[in-house]
Amino acid sequence: MSISTWAEKYCLQSDSLMLLFKPDVGYVCESKPLQQELSRGSGDLSEFLSNLPASEYLAPDFSQFSLQLESVKCIEDLYCYQLSHAILDEGESWQKFADTLSRLHDVMLRLSKAESLESLYKQAIVEAQQHLYLDRLAILLLDPETNEMVGTWGTDEEGNVKDETAFRGPIPDAPWVELTLASKDHVEVWDNVDLLYYNQIVGKGWNAMAAMWDGDKPIGWIACDNLINKRPIHLGLKRLLVNLVNLWGMPLYATNTYRNSRR
Image: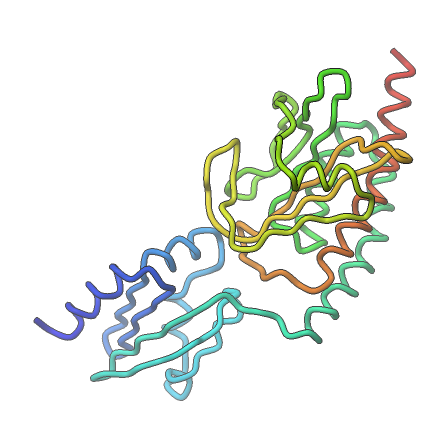
């Protein structure tokens, strides 16, 4: 059995983010967990490796894929890389937070020009994806008469913005939901959890939830995660979401109130 054969078998059966690379023949093998990560839009590792200078074979920079190198072994010119999700250092994390807050002002200016409540929901999702470093986002409203959550616009498992107004269901009976809807400026964040789309598991990563308020009354919440690009949690995530729900809650409530008054 050649080294490439047993190595490939080992790689494909690995439950870690493993990558094999043999430069002289352009051979690349990705473990199944790594294939799953890359299928969510992180990029093409084969193309990246084919353009890699020989001087960097022992320490490639995988940061463009939101990955970092944990270890490398080389046996008979076959490189075995063990990877992990990249973690921003504190300085980078706070810089990204400051940059995001500066973008938030421009986002709100654009949202203020939305012509309808529906277009406001949709544009809010698009803006969050394009300018606030949030992969997937959904805006859910509360129906106090039926005690249900009601969908507006959200994002599917591939990052596409979707009309979810047909969705309606009971508010989850869970302590984290109760806590979020009972406390202003409270953000729940869970790391390394199953990520869902219509109650189906579509991946793993971090997930966050923050409520929108009208005075002392919760009117809905936003939920977001990092399914698509696997960006790590940055230090300012909670503060960003607090700012987001406080700013978004006002125009959403005002527009909805105006529409109800016209009926």
